[in-house]
Image (cartoon, rainbow, N blue to C red; front, side, top):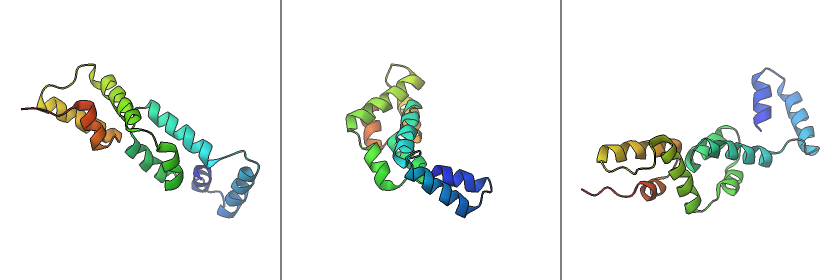
Length: 127
């Protein structure tokens, strides 16, 4: 859990942290699922894609199964999110030059969108 990691990093004894976190979970005051859902919501608002969000979730100790459950969306959903991120950064017009296309593709890739989504959003460049 993220809270346990943060408490240990501040120097609190691991056994005390584990005991307190276990009690909070037992009382349903903290939840990995609620944390993960809120985390994904905040990252979506920042225009991040599923690959980057998943990596950040893993860094915070969220298991792959929980990440899969929360990040499972349709291709259309991720395409819409990628288009929103692209439009916010570059405006409404789609790239007509190879260099512009590459810059926008790199931007979306760095945001964590997979290649197939990027190609659907930007379209294929024709010579």
